[in-house]
Every structure is written in structure tokens, then in C-alpha cells.
Length: 147
Image (cartoon, rainbow, N blue to C red; front, side, top):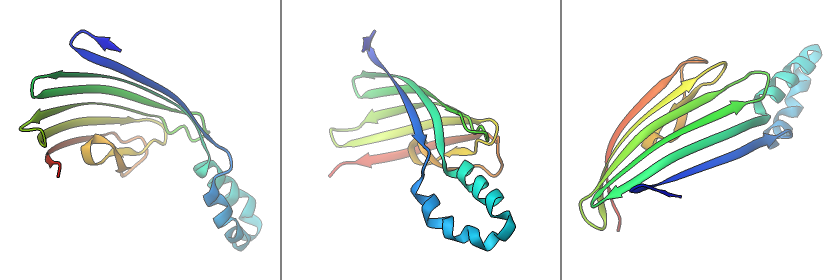
């Protein structure tokens, strides 16, 4: 949707997977846990299942060779381990030509509960923090050339 000199956009998604494929691959190993098998299975099930809502909103503005994007996202984890994460950031792109850009990205991930998301390249999700609930910041600079 055009708003002022730029465009605003948003997304809402429900993320749900009650029967993850990986669980079937590791299920035979539960027998090795003996009497602890139900406890081990429950821990893996809770870790591998997905049940969350994702909210995202952003604004993009281009003026001449300059493009600015600001965005905010929130993952509301509905599982018992409650790994909520919110992220926000800004990107700036300067077009040197039709095929070459200079880029700068600043991203912040705020984790709560057992959330451990960390930004990777270009501010996208790219790893995990050292401990649950630890926040993370990413600053990146780059040059892109399209062939």
C-alpha cells in the first residue's frame, strides 16, 4: 500500500507442525533411553514441534538512487518453552548503477523465554545466541553486483 513517498507492507502467518519429519528419524533412538524414553521423547517433541504466530510490518521508500527499508517482526511462540523473538531493523541501499549497489544493514533481535534467534547475513535469521533469552545485534555493509 502506498503511503507518502513509500510503501507499507505487512504479513501475518500461523506456523504449525505437530508431526515434524525429524521426529520420525530419531524415534528409534528413544529405545536406548530405556525407562527414560517417554521423558526424552517428550523433550524432543516439544523442541521439534512448531506452534507460533508471526507478525511483520515494514516500510520501503526509494528516492533517486537511495532506498530505505524499516521493518519490525514478532514471533509469538505458543509452545511450552515459549521462545518468543522480536526483531527490528533498517537497511539502506545506494544504487551506484543499474547493476551495482552499496548496502548497509542494522538489525536487532530481542529474545525472551527460551528464544535464541540471532541475525545472520543481511539481517536475516542466521544463527542462535549463546544462551536462551540473550539479545543480538547485527551491523553489515556490502557491495552487490548483478551479472
